[in-house]
Every structure is written in C-alpha cells, then in structure tokens.
Image 1 (cartoon, one colour):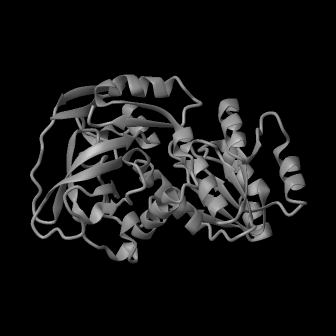
Image 2: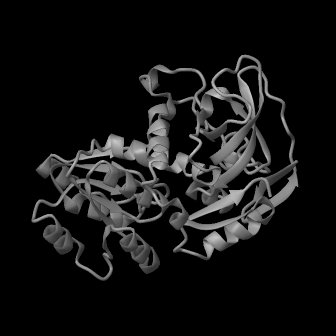
Image 3: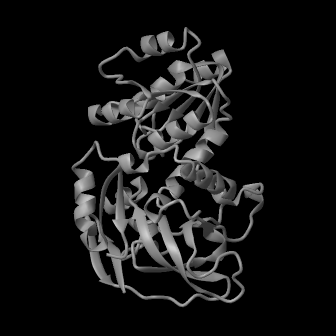
Length: 339
C-alpha cells in the first residue's frame, strides 16, 4: 500500500503505508481524491513540525469509497461514496460550551493524526458523510473546503440581497463567494492576482483589484452608498484587515476566516465603537455545514472543474507542492490517491 509522508521542511516522500483493519465504530476507506489545503502547504513549509510530528501522512480534503466496516457501524455500507469530516473531538470540556468543533480537546485528523494522502485510510464512522450518486468522487473532494465556506457564511448571518465583500479570491474565498451567491447575497470579491480576477469575472462575480482601483469608491458606487453588510477577511494580510473595517456599514459584520498567525496586525478598534461593528471568528465546520455543502455541490451551482488547477498522482506529491509554491494564481490541486 502506498502512502505519502511529510518528512521535513520542503520534503514529501512516497513510502509503504499500512492498511489498518477497522476496530469498533471505525471504517476503512479506499481514498479517491484529496485536495491540497493551505494548511498542508504550511506543513510543507515546516512551520507545524511540533504539532505534526514528522514523518507523518497528512491530508484531509478527502473523498473515498467505503472498503471495510468495523463492528457496530451502521451509517454506511461497503461501496458507499463518502466525504470525511476529519475531526476527533475528545472529552467534552466546560470551556467548549457544547461546541466541540473548536473545543479544547479537538484533534484534527490529517494534522494531529494520520491523514488521507494514502491508498487506504481508517477513520471513525461518525466522520463520514455519504455522497449522492450524481456527485463524482473528484468533486466530492471539495466538500471539506466547501463546508468551511458554508460555516463562514452561517456565522456571518447573511441574508438575501445583503452586500457582501470577500477579501481574498483564493480557493476558500471563491467557495465563500459561491455560497453567498446561493443565499441570494450581492457579492463583491477583492483580489490582487490578475489571473484569479479574470477567472472570477468569467464566473460572473463583481471583482475589484485594490492595487489598481480605489476600492472604497468602487464599493460605494456598486452599493449606492450603502457599503458592505458583511465582509469576509480571507487574505490573511494587513491590507485585508484594514479593508474589513473600512468597508462595513453601521452594525456591519466582519467574519474572520484567515488564520492571522505570526506578526500581529493593526486593527482600527475605534470603528467598532463608532458604527457598532461585529467581529466574528469562524473556524472549521459542524455536521450541518457538511450536509449543506453536499446539497450545494450536488445542485450543480459550482463549476468545480473550473476551480481545479491540476489533478496528479500520489507518487508526484513532491512535485505538486513545489508547483503550488511557484504558482500564486493556482486554485485547487487534487491528488489521486489510487495512482
């Protein structure tokens, strides 16, 4: 059995994995496709070694076919197509207030425990969501990041006809834009990469390049002065943090999607006081977000093939990560885990 291992900063290796027979409440999967997440790229850059503990098989944006059932599993059967919600909650804690997806004892499968960049993967049965027949396994690999987008929009309490700005038109920002469109919102995307801007415009989105255009003036014109009801900060940049407070209107909401680690960003707190702005954190997803993602994906509303930059084999995983580093316009890279 083949498995890819993150060995050290800048290096993946292909090796012999271990097919694990499922125990009680577990399911063994034949992994079909696994998308490369921004977190996987951070791992590749060596900034998460203490948490990951290399050599480790990572990857979590997976679609798969059920291959073997452990004792007591009733929610899926052999041959089912599934997406994996890679969260292991651990013991409940009073701090969590009933939200284990961001709880103190959460373990992320594919980071804290072995992940999907392998032929065969054994996971708890509760992590599995069945995919409808009309949704391909290739497109099923989008369910995990699409569930992130569904959760972000839910946290933002977006309603029909609200003006929304997505700051950063990468993979997650683009999926947020599609979910916002599905909710009937009026979507604007701010992005600096011209290739991405061209693609987003072709997909029917209103776009702004804040390097070339006066973003505030453009948004004022597009909204007839109303400005933004809900902004989604997905860029992870200081410029994005500045923009999010500049564009929202009275009692506007800001959803913090990007992980602002490392150097501290400056935030204009006065504007929160002046206009009664809300800042909302959004992390991962809940079970209902996966079901929403599957519903939207199955509707055909998202042209997934347009968002796929490349599909390649597991044995080429090193080249895939090298290409991602050299392609700032790239969107979603998928790894075929059976090749």
